[in-house]
Length: 175
Image 1: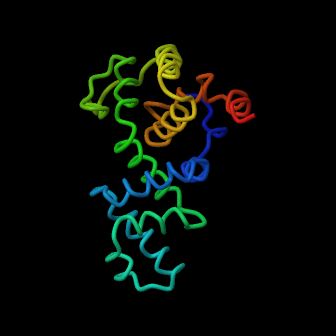
Image 2 (image 1 turned 90 degrees about the vertical axis):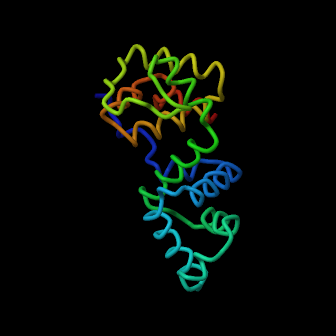
């Protein structure tokens, strides 16, 4: 498996998102019915920061909770991972589906149908990644692929070796 130590952790990826993307992610996070544990963690963080009761935070409209989430100084790895997953599920489905199509993986609107699928070969991953960056911004692809790796390193860990995620490429892209 490729070395994952050079990859940004979910909390680092979260910090690297633009303010606009963070707000989209936070909004999707609060609408995610599978994020109850992470939402409660954020409710407590917001309540502490704003000197509110948790019950008051829970009652806030999603838009306010999203803005407060974005304003937090930092989030845990679990919350950051859920924020990133929610963002991709709500705003990046076409890219997710395109990537899986390039790999020949059956999916339903970007969600893999076969949970026991074999990990794609490093060559297939490199080719699919290169093709994906022809249709989508490299930063979006990089964030998506890194999120995939942290979500399931056994299946997607070899993505860390693709040129798009290499430290040299990432640093030259930011220059």
